[in-house]
Picture 1: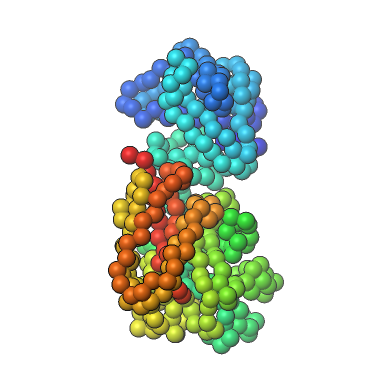
Picture 2 (picture 1 turned 90 degrees about the horizontal axis):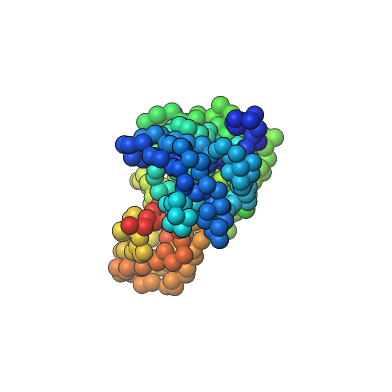
Length: 375
């Protein structure tokens, strides 16, 4: 935690930055003489005191306060993000490193589970405890259907016909999504509209949100609307940073919805008969672009492939987003005739982690997750 304003006090009663180490082994480990550093030109910046021991499967907190006494390091952490490391007693050999992004007040940044490869924000930090998100924060909720030009399909409580977004709980448990965010400006403004307190979606249930830029009309009216010419929508966790789901859509038609087939699936299609607040019915599909896609391998290290079987002719574009919603890759591949194609995606400079992809075929989109993992 690089911005500890009110969360936890150190042994001096101060709110200091902190770093948690974890011993993944079944034996006690001595850390005497090891180093912690946030300066890779000075790997031996701060020496861990003699006699420091971390128990088997245990945790140890170091206060990055700059005080240089006890378990207080001689450096603090940067709220704008930086790189830190644990170094062997030789002062040269790296044991572990992490590069963390910009930090938020009283929100920690940690491995998804103790010792795991992927890192996420924790709205409920767990110093000296096992890392893990509450079920309501590990959202199985997705954007399931939308309409960006509603003239007669469904009225809101005021009698108007606004744009709408349908969320779907793709699990068998009730999910509390209070405090999560919806936005049509991922990355630039992820915390645009906050989902009201007390908002719960029942198992395999739906929530309809009116995207009309008119919050005074009701608690489920957002402060943004959707563009008929194409837009993007994303759900972010309560920290306003962690991406839960993102959808990028192209030009829409009036009173034709765009949704997943079936509920919660990765395939997106147009529906002649929209189903706001109800299950997406495959019999109502306006499926002009019959396309199947397989992504393999996934997880992958250096490259992955999209194998596409197209029964219609159309243009193909691939988008990739990181977990903050930032677009990290976009490539237009041109116009493809009907047939079977294999498109390679190279990670290039992307770091290990979870990403979201959208492959657009004209007005049709296939979305999913990519996992990059060094072997």
